[in-house]
Length: 269
Image (cartoon, rainbow, N blue to C red):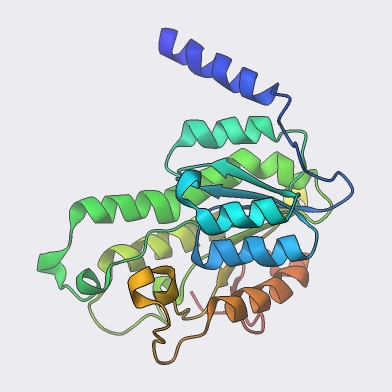
């Protein structure tokens, strides 16, 4: 009981903090982005900030997120929050902190992707610890995030929840070969969680959509691979700029759909 009481008191103190919403412009729309320290998440921060949006950008280790810190210093309406998406107490704390700050667009981007060497292992090489972690990060955490911020999004003008998923989680579009067991299974679970949640969101006026970002070249995220281009991939800025166009154009008819980054075309499950 003592531990639970301390958690409750901590949530109350955080919600009442004078820093809640500090730096955010009440006259501008707000986006909340997870996994904002690099790659797609960081590019979302960059492009939304350039539009003068309020940006609440989360990262597991903000102190090590140098590029994100630079953006926050450049744009006064970018606020950085620490968040490991598997820490549900922290998700609840942030939801309490921003309870009075409406979130127009909630982007669940944080994810666990397979390492190159492990991606092609057969079933006898499946790492069960990574499999459990993939389910927790890629599927369960986004559902928790949507649950915690549902009312905050519903109170906004745009009312959009966007889940960054993958064609790897599609039974029809994923590679027809044994690979990426943990990743593909977790993304398929995410898709089903959101398919199910989409039967609830219209009651709150929310548009819940899953987006495939395309096959993005993420090699530049690692210093040792800077400048290396993987064949048949697109760059992060192209993926995000096109996803932004899709997000801007979302309507209630897109609720519960799995869409392509490039043109908003509906993708098969």
